[in-house]
Image 1 (cartoon, rainbow, N blue to C red):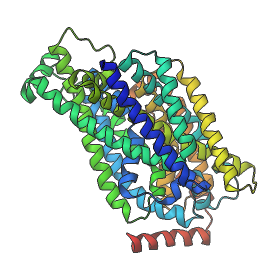
Image 2 (cartoon, rainbow, N blue to C red; image 1 turned 180 degrees about the horizontal axis):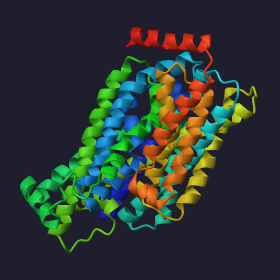
Image 3 (cartoon, rainbow, N blue to C red; image 1 turned 60 degrees about the vertical axis):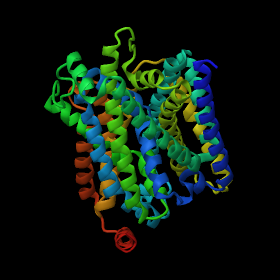
Image 4 (cartoon, helix red, strand yellow; image 1 turned 90 degrees about the horizontal axis):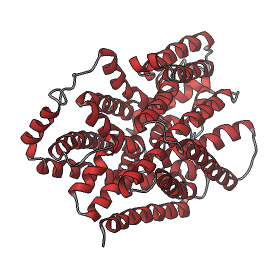
Length: 494
């Protein structure tokens, strides 16, 4: 068999496994809560790894190593900021959100939680949330599809558009039918594959480049400052990189996992598993980039045309074609896990937070599940059209969408969990200010080139939300009772 045949067999086995999980989840999905939130039945390991896989996406295996390969260890500050942010998200948000969403009318989406938490009779807040999710997730899904196209282009020599079509169809199939359970189970498997691949590639690669000391010497030969965390960085650049961590508090596709875990007690185990997975995966991605610098310098006959494909290229060079195919499946896993998670959250926003908020019908759950599947298809088509022309790097697309959610939702989520005086007017005003700041700042080169747009968006959102909430606050006994019940439940069940 040829090398390509071995690789293709590995990829087909992986894709068949994802479709099987989708079918299994389809058999277990009976109502809207199952489709959107998996019946709140996830265990800690599935919750942790599915959140991690949904979070990291193709960025972990392509965008992040590519940035370090090009610019050096200064780019690692993004990973440091993300790790701090993820830990605080698990610590501060996960337990309270799991309890509060259940206490407050058993909310199954972030927008419905905010409306129920703030006892807002108007659908405006929920509609604004749904619209923001729809706008930024369309860009986010598009970034995943671009990564899928690049993957097939780099790995099999297929055209970018062929790869785009294959990835889009497979991920659409299991998400469309299996819903949240399919997304979570496939993310768990994909998280394991990503983890193993990111450990194996740099470990074997270091031996091929002559061991740790020889590898380090080669990297310094290429660029003496490549291993420095501070070379080429500025104060604004460091703040921008670490500020990626702020984004976690507002990412719907990640924090929805906190709502779906089986009990608040399990959040502690999930946090340990999730942060351990994340730390080792980021270290693996960093080492992959550094080994790539050494390897391609030692072998000048081989050229790396796309820095974002350094993991893919090393995997093909180092391993037997079948194992190399599994390495390729890891990249595909990273890409597909995030696309599927984002599609299901966008679907829930369209059906639960836009359609049901505007058209208050009493249709049976089966009808809404059908609408949810139609929404998945609709968003996938729009993102596919946006992805057809590859006009931005994966990291650029991801950073814009990440800032959008962090800037629009992050302060609101934190205040809703920890501040009794938050009002719907304050939340709506802050959310709009945060989203608009990201859109304007992110599209002005002078501003975004000096400071990541999530920083001003998060700060302005927080200030506006607090000021407007204090101006519009009126005591509400129902809100106070639910807040107290949440604290009592946390104290009892942790």
